[in-house]
Structures are given as structure tokens and as C-alpha cells.
Length: 606
Image (cartoon, rainbow, N blue to C red; front, side):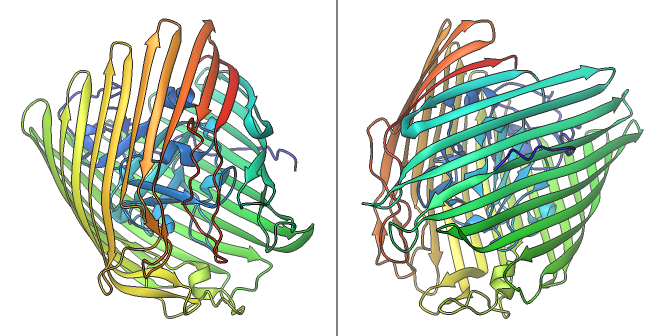
């Protein structure tokens, strides 16, 4: 499969920096970074009144993660699980919700499969991104359907020159390069990356299952003095992955394409009034093969037009917006309905009164498939002193039934669709406290989410159905340190997602997880380690089938041996731990890779 690379591309960053909604000066410190995902505008993490985690460029470059799940594993409120390593199905659960009850966005553009409702996390190469923002808690009043557990936004590389090459265990190799040019207000950037591995066994006594990925990014933008800008951006990821068939000898393979394209523009009408617009398309395409013969394809496209009016009144900010979104399924499977449209209007107010901050937002969605939904949120923050802020919030959200949930044609023995499904509806209350200091911070949050009509697949009845009442209660602790030559981050999560009718824990949810990252620089040399753990999880609604918890340790070292040149060694799963996070319908475990050593050489001007 060739690298399909991008004639045009989408808006650099649709969410442009605006004035912060607090009286405090904007800080660019590592410990209190600027974030845009929680409020659609730029505020510091501390002033966002949200539980938010930022994984910055330096962290991504130092840790050299091979998969996106390595980036997200153990982060506050985040649980990851899936069907093995290297391009195999990966699920991301935020605050005990399902993988398709949290949004994935790439540079402001939503990406997921409209048939399954879940993003293909396994096909997103970390090498192509320079920043990750994880917002925990409902964001339905800003982003619409599916932002129940939270929002993860990935920001693609947008400047600099880089070249990286490396290889290691499992016959894995990686090669990437990129360059940018800026002159007279016009900026152009292009980059590409290839990763290939023979993979490992994902089923005991079977064969290695390989993975190949080719990705690229392109963007061009122009700044019209201080009055406005226009930009085009495209991100693409494509390749193939091997997985298990009904027998170890059977060869199963999937070819895939993920693509995001967007055009954005903004203009300042006056000093305190800005208009922004984004037109985008997201594609999720896949075709499944058995012994070289096609089993069919699933191609979905989501087209979106979003317009926002941003008004600044002193320290206050007001956003009014509208959005039109169209989902389309082009598949070898004849869905009962192949498309649906959604129209929305939303508003947000960010108010600052000295030590007191207030936030409120409201959104109305009208969908062809399931009718109208109204979501809202409110938050209050109070600075106790210069270092501590108390926050409280309440928000509602909903998860839309997918095309598989509603329209998949009957195909014994699985009857995926249930035309009588209702959307999930949730309400969440949260209380948080943050301490922000010159060299470190801590953030604690406690929350409760009530979900009505949670959508699950019942294997006993072979169909999708609604659970009447589900409750998720949780606590999260995050800490960060940036002191002299030390960098560290600590996270701990305790969560209880419970079916209130049975008292059982929702399947495939770990109730405990944590992570510790430590790095120390010694001149031109840096040494680091990551320790993470996940508690046990159940694979069934009755809580009779249990997968054990596990802990992992990774090590890394780097040497800046010349200007912009770095050599790195990363050892993942140092203790060669055997661990399982998913079990097949037939009862066998999906195995993850053991110890892996990767060596790389890179040139990077960023």
C-alpha cells in the first residue's frame, strides 16, 4: 500500500489563542500550559476549571512511544485495553465510559468510525503529533454527541525540520522526515513517517501478526497582519494489520485509511470581536481479508461546517456558534439507513470577577436519527490564594447510537442493530482543588456521573440494548514537577462504574490505575523511567470472568551528541511482563508484546 499523500490539507489549529478567562497573566510554563480543548479558547490549565492533562512535545520525544495507547495508558481518568500490540484494536475509556463515549479530535476535527462509533486509536502514529490534551468530564454542551467521558485532542506537528530513523525488537523499524518554510506571513509544512513490524503472537501457539503504517501531514496557512488568517491542513494514516482468524493457520488482514482534512479561517471584525469558521472532512475506511479474499469494506465519512463568533468584554468572553454535520456510510454491507445529518447551535460565557471565575454553556442538537437533545454545563472557580483554586462543575452529555447500533442488517448469530435504542444521557457533578507552585503542582478531583440508557452489547441476547441506570463514581490525583534537571508526573485513578440494577461492574473497566514518569538530565545525557499499573477487570456483565491486573516498567536514555542531533534507547516492558486486557469470544486471551528494545537517531530543530 503506497503512501497516499495529501494534495491539500486542513486548518492548522482551528482553536486559535484568545484572551484567557482569568485575571492572571498567560503562563507558558510546562506546569501550567495553555489549553484550548476545555473551553474552545485559550486558557491556562489551572484557569480552565477542568480536569485536564497535557502531554507536551518534549515528553513525546523523550518517551518515544510506539503506539498511542502507550501515551494514554495510566493517565488520570484514562483506561486502555485491546486485542494485542502493534496495530490491533485499542480501546480508550475515560472515567468509566465506553470507548465510543469520548471524542477524539485532530487539530479541531472530529475523527471516528460512524459505524462503530469508536476512534481507531491503534492506527494513530505518535511520531506525527507534538501535543496531546486530555479533558475529563462531559463536554456535550460544546462538542455535541459522545463527549460523555471527555475529549482527547491531538495536535499535529506544524513547524521545524526533523529526520528520525530507528529499529529494534520484533523486526521493527521507523523512518520519518519533515520540513517547514515561512515567509511573508505564509507558512508551509510537510512531513511523513513509516513504521513497520513483524509483530508478535496475539494468541498462544499461533503466529506473529505484523503491522505496517504510513502517515503524513501537510499544512499551509497565511496570516493577514493582525486581522485574520486562513489555513489548510491534512493528516493521513494508512497501512495494513494482521490479526487472528478462526484458526491459527488462517490468515486475516485489514487494510485501513484514516484521513482528516480541514479548511479554516478567522477574522477580527474589531479589537474585541472575532469570527472563526472551519469546514472539514474525516474519513475512516477499512477492508477485511481472509486468506487474500475480501470479506467486505466499511467506509465512513463525516463532513462538518462550524462557525463561531467570539466577543471579548474586558475580562469576559462570549462564544456563539453553529454547526452542521453529515455522516455517511459507504459499505459492502447494506445498512438500513446509510446517512444522517445533525444541526446544532451553542453558546458559552466565560466570566472573570477577580478571584471568582464563572463558566456556562448550552447546546441544542437536532439529529435525523434520534431527534433533539439539549446539553448544558456550568462551573465556578474560586482562588483561595495565589497558589490554590477550588472548582465545582455540573454538566450533561449524551452518546448517540451508532449506525451499527441502529441500522446494521440482521446477520445470524449476531443481530447488532436495535432500532428501538435510545441515546445515552448523562449528568455529572465534579469538585476539584488544584495547587500551583513555581516548580510543581497537584490536582485532585472527585466526581459522580449518572447515566441513563447506557448502550451495551449483550452477547446472551446477541443484540445492543440500553441499561436503565449506570453510576460512575471516581477520584483522580495528578502531580507534576519541573525542577532544575528533574521532570516528573504522577497519576492515580480510582473509579467504580456500576450497573445499578445488578450492582455489577461494567465489563472491561479497570477500577484502579496509575502512572509515574521520571526524567533526569545530566548535561547532554537524559535518563528516564515510566512505571504504570492497571487493576483487574471483568470481561462479562455478570462479573464471573476476570482478567488480572498488571504493572509495567519502561526505561529510556538519550544523548544530545551534536546540535539538534539525539540518539535514544527505549526499553518497553523491561520485566518482560505477560499481561492481558481482553479475551476473545472463543475464550482465549489476546496477548500483548513482551520486552521490546528500540534504538533511534534523530535530527530535530524544534
